[in-house]
Image 1 (cartoon, rainbow, N blue to C red):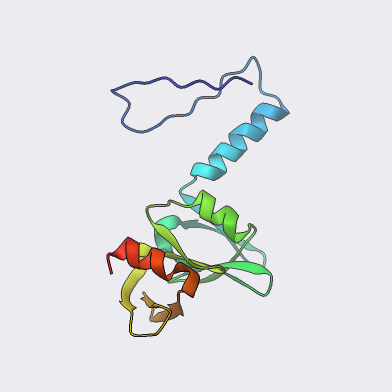
Image 2: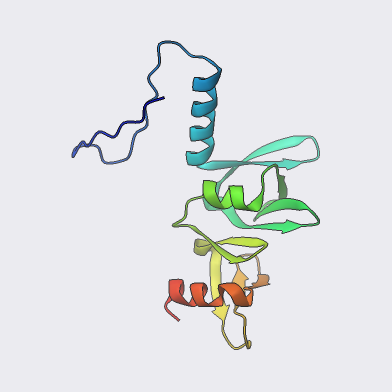
Length: 146
């Protein structure tokens, strides 16, 4: 497989094109992986229902009891991916990891409480309260200029 970069000063957004003689399993896998990596939506599962969730609607993604969940204003959805996979797939400008088990949407943060020793309290839309772990405090303070 060849990988090539072409610079085009008129191309405002990066564009990926897969060129092959014919579509086969390898080409299909590459296309599927690229789509998942750059998708603006996430599939959320609840009972026997699948819901397409826009990244901008996601408040937080967290791991609990060996499952990964996604919380929106409409409810909580189970995800069929690991937390690190979601971190790779989501828009890095929008989401930040605040602990080993949680990612939050920066646009959904109402305020930060830095009065706790060693951690930062995070209040999200919907009055959702969570905390950073000590390991991520420095990074959070850096991102928000604290």
